[in-house]
Length: 235
Image 1 (tube, rainbow, N blue to C red):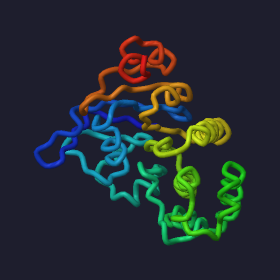
Image 2 (spheres, helix red, strand yellow; image 1 turned 120 degrees about the vertical axis):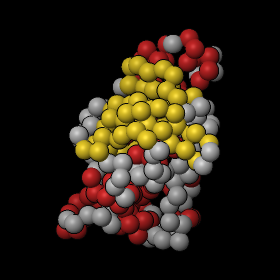
Image 3 (cartoon, one colour; image 1 turned 30 degrees about the vertical axis):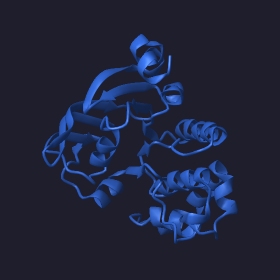
Image 4 (cartoon, rainbow, N blue to C red; image 1 turned 135 degrees about the vertical axis):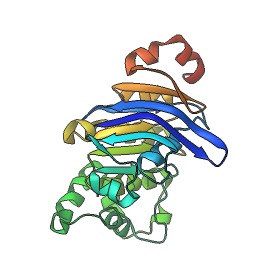
C-alpha cells in the first residue's frame, strides 16, 4: 500500500531523513521505533505532505504522492493522529469529529461513521458536548484517533499514541488499535517510543536512528533481537 524509496528530508542545513526505504503492506500494522530525534515524526509528516522531501519517492497504492497538498493526501486515503494529539481545544468533541470529515463528499454517511466510532470509544459519545480542552489526556488521544478515522482512511498514521497517558489507558488504546485493524482492515503505521507495546501489536517493524533505518523485520523477531532489547526494551 505504501512504498517509500530513498527519501531525504532536510530542515534547512540539517539532514533529518537520510535515504529512508520503507514498505507498508495492506491491512497490516507496521511500527517504527527509535529514540527522540530519530526522525520518526518527520517521516509521518512527510507522508502527510506537511513536509516536502528534498528527494526520493512516496508511493501510495501505486501513485506518487510527493507533490500533493496535505488535503489531497487525506482525500487519497491517508489520515494522521499527530504527536501531542493537537485537538481543537476550543471546539466541542462533536465539532472535532466533524472537522475530521471536512474532505468527505458523502456527508450523508457521517452519522453511521460516528456510531461506529462510539462503539470503539464509548467515552467519546459520553463527552460530545464538552470542549476538547477539558478532556483528560487519554480521552484527547481517543478523540485524536477518532477524528482521523472520520476521513475514512485506508492508511492511518499514529504518532506516539501512548504519550502522556496513564498506563491503564495505554493498554486500552492499543487493544482498540488492534481491534480496529482486525475489524475494518485499516492499515496502520505506528510511531511509538514504547517499543514493548508497539512490537507486541505490530506485524512488522523498523528501527530508526538519526534519520536512517538501521534494522527491520517481523515484529516478533525484532522483540527478540539482543540489540533492540538493550537499546529500546530496557534490558
